[in-house]
Image (cartoon, rainbow, N blue to C red; front, side, top):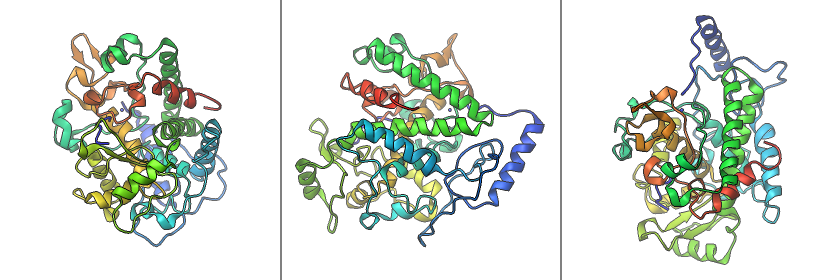
Length: 406
């Protein structure tokens, strides 16, 4: 669906601390990469490092950041993917789609670009790894639509952002009326849940940026849980249906068969170019549409495993409809950091949270907060649930995210 549904990094100023960070970064660069994560100092007694599976395919290392070196021995799959996937699958126990191992033989080349995720073929693995990539600051690939959001067309001019670079804004009925529109303001109970998520994430973020590895992992788990819950609301409860099979058969390129649990859906309210939606987070297979930003960001991380900016619909069906959903998961999380990037970089008050506009002036990018809850046209928001489009889907996602351990 070509739905354009679419932060201030606290820099450590003391020279003594900076030297420690640089030293840790240099040490980490000498270690084999596994599931990357952030800490200001190594985890005590980490045990042997987790060695990646070498697929023999094209590989680019995940992005590194001097302020966020990976702690030694951090295993994303046992610490985040499996426990979070287990909780969310239990919530949707009639489906249980996150933890089954998927068949990589039905995959796409984008499923094999990064050896750090090879052999981890559950949907929960690919979502958690996409979250991990986006825990590290990068510049958004929004130059092609920048002018629509009060941003420059030059992506190099953007302030880099991540899932934890900026705090979450606290919301209320008034601010949500501004960002979502008065007809989409949720109930007081749902607003309370939105703020519970924001307060908890802000706590984890603050502690993580101060060097607490446990809090970094908790932030990774909470973002992963939000995305896994969203995958159910977006697609996983209706993926294996006769309708999904029919739509896939009608649109499939030669040699392609819909893999298990990959939803093909046609939105009757969209025009022909935007009607077909595929996979975990329901993307239209149009390389020039709203996945263009994802393609740009993917290609910066994986230049030797790039996706053509003008790829055909057939190729994009294979990409967003792959059995392992690597690019689909990446794009889903990139949509979150993308909407945050608009709020951080826009020069217009309408494109950022009201908290960022004080005494008639916008706060500087590094001092802004960010919010999940924006209309598509205001902050490039991709996800209907975060916009409360049905009046109940925001509550459904938040109730799932805040249930059980988080």
